[in-house]
Amino acid sequence: MSKIEIEFYITANGKSPYVKWMDALTISIRAIIHKRIARLEAGSFGDAKAINGCRGLYELRIHEGPGYRVYFGKLKNVLVVLLCGGKKGTQSRDVEKARKYWDDYKENNED
Image 1 (cartoon, rainbow, N blue to C red):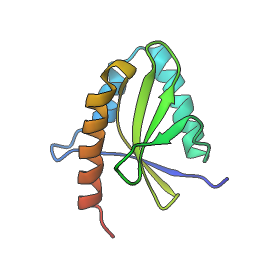
Image 2: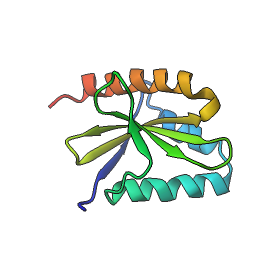
Image 3: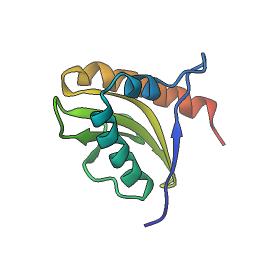
């Protein structure tokens, strides 16, 4: 598999919702999530599923603790944009945030 480029979504105020979310997690959970992101970078998407109604938006499920989720956008099979993260219990709100971030990213990064 070919290597995938990983980017962080950055809001208009220069912040990354994904990085902010990761910073609030414990070191052990961050390590688990970093390993999963490394697998994404290697082209192995594992337990990821498309979000209905939003082309190119995915949820990476991490079956640890309360069930962590990483939301990412995928373009042209070569770029993954890490948008935000959450827990299974906040999934509905997190999906809506991810949709907003993904739409914003695509609008501001068109080729």
